[in-house]
Image (cartoon, rainbow, N blue to C red; front, side, top):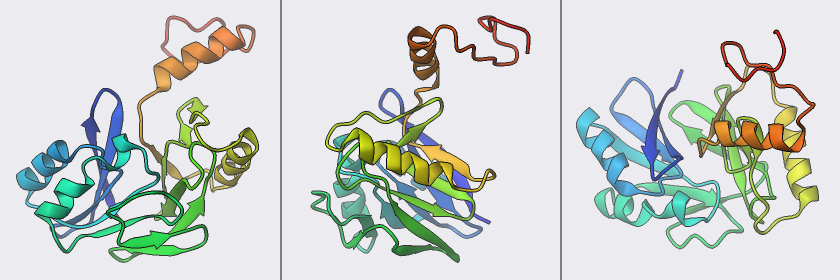
Length: 197
């Protein structure tokens, strides 16, 4: 079983660090190298691979420095995205091995044209496709692509743990209530709940 550690970055990004029982790790969407290096150095990890979901700077900005610090690191990412540091391009249906677990690559276009996600060990690393109470903005893709991508994710088993790349929960819920004020959201122990749960 893999262990996941969150590394906060910028205002609301999550960089995910995956490790098992030894001192090796993989990071997902490292937009900033500094907090990743801080955790790696503090915990004595060796970086084996970097997984990228899409090409936006807040997801790849730290990759060049991490590659400089760990020259043999594998940089895995979407085949159809402009990522200059990529060593292993992947696309929908490919598999990536993380330690002893196989992760399948899912094409989840919409936020960007070539956005991908990684699913394995009952864990989903979905970048900017899915968030708590929302989904990613359409920068390059179409609404139809995003809908199809969300349908793929909705079909995953209920026990799947979702690791998204931003903390947007509060703003997504506020937006949902503004857009659909009669669609009551009931969250236990929240003062703004408009009806009894």
